[in-house]
Image (tube, rainbow, N blue to C red; front, side, top):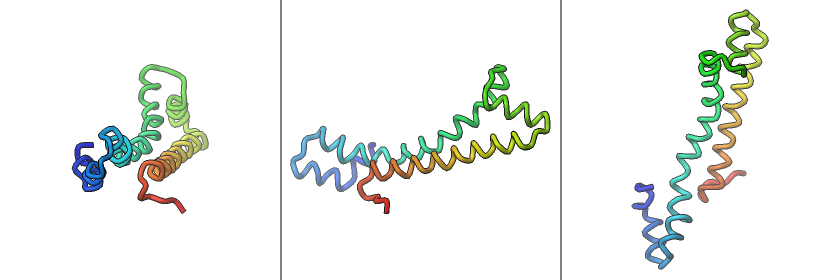
Length: 111
């Protein structure tokens, strides 16, 4: 946010006489949230893939423990299914980040 506040378009908005609240929320915050959209979009699959360690350590039932038990039991079909599920989560997370770019950044247009 600090880097965005020093940009030319924020100074221009202030020079036009816009209120400080409008400058912060409309001009600065929308552009500062773009890197956050990338982070959130890529954290979605990481959250689910981290369940493997938590569920195995604490013996909780879930997809992580299921994947571990199937891998130890040489059930390759189930392991491929869980891996495909995590791959779909990566694609969905990237898609959500791209859609968020279009909402947050007015310079990005989806065709």
